[in-house]
Amino acid sequence: MNRILVIVVTYNAMKWADRCFGSLRNSALPADVFVVDNGSCDGTQDYLEERFPEVHLYRNNENSG
Image 1: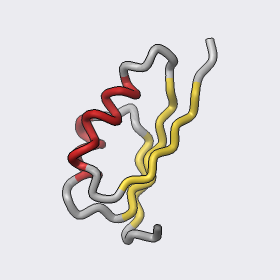
Image 2 (image 1 turned 90 degrees about the vertical axis):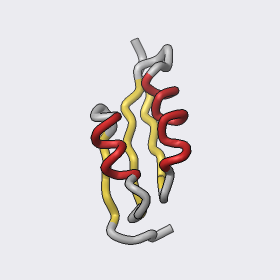
Image 3 (image 1 turned 180 degrees about the horizontal axis):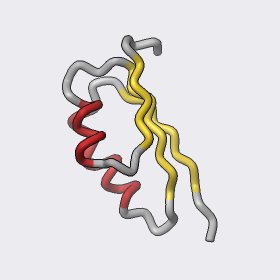
């Protein structure tokens, strides 16, 4: 079976996290999900690690665009 690679760039994305990553989790095709977080200060990083442990999270210290 094919797998897809998904790369998501986030910055203070708490209000979209469940909808976005929940949808990817429930996709008919298995997906490897990588998140590059640009220094969120709303708890996004910790929330993703706790709620979506299958996501590969890369934490930037600042919003580099």
